[in-house]
Amino acid sequence: SAVISQKPSRDICQRGTSLTIQCQVDSQVTMMFWYRQQPGQSLTLIATANQGSEATYESGFVIDKFPISRPNLTFSTLTVSNMSPEDSSIYLCSVDRAGGQYNEQFFGPGTRLTVL
Amino acid sequence: AQSVTQPDIHITVSEGASLELRCNYSYGATPYLFWYVQSPGQGLQLLLKYFSGDTLVQGIKGFEAEFKRSQSSFNLRKPSVHWSDAAEYFCAVGAGSNTGKLIFGQGTTLQVKP
Image (cartoon, rainbow over all chains, first blue to last red):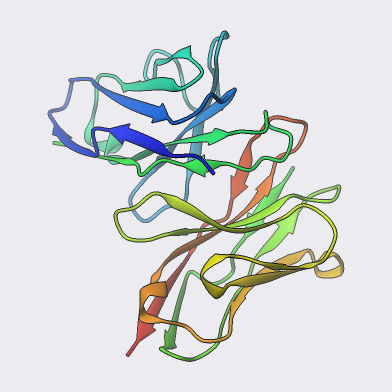
């Protein structure tokens, strides 16, 4: 497994502002992922963040709204920009320690975001 | 395209009773299958996984799952449920092609009655 931490654990923000979420892993990993979990819903993949390359975004998600950084093999950030109440969700990061070979992911505790 | 269906949105069982959560997948090749649990306010914890071999896999917390290729199913079972098992359960299938991606089902909420 992997020990993954996220900061902040929760936040309440005003519409129009931005929030940056941090994800820290206890070991080096190639693949990191960012998910959104809207209230009462399943997980939706926002993007794949591999160190040394630009993040790959899923359909419906764009870099201007969700810029991602991946400066090294243990850390990534997701920014939720120009927030609206529809962005209220849990945001989770996860890691794949086997380079995507088996699709086995370990998840952080999540960041619960409320936008007023 | 790969997909995962969890037919039961909400299940209620009595403490001590047996449990089976259903999961059906759509995938062209041999799938990598997972069950995750999410307790309230928590992230996802991996319960068990199937890659190949024995179709009955054992996981943590007394859970097991059986891969049935003929039925495209990967149902999760536990012989005796504890109150602490109340949570959201997600079935997932690997998207393959070394992408590392997972496709999640909609989840099943388990409520445990005393």
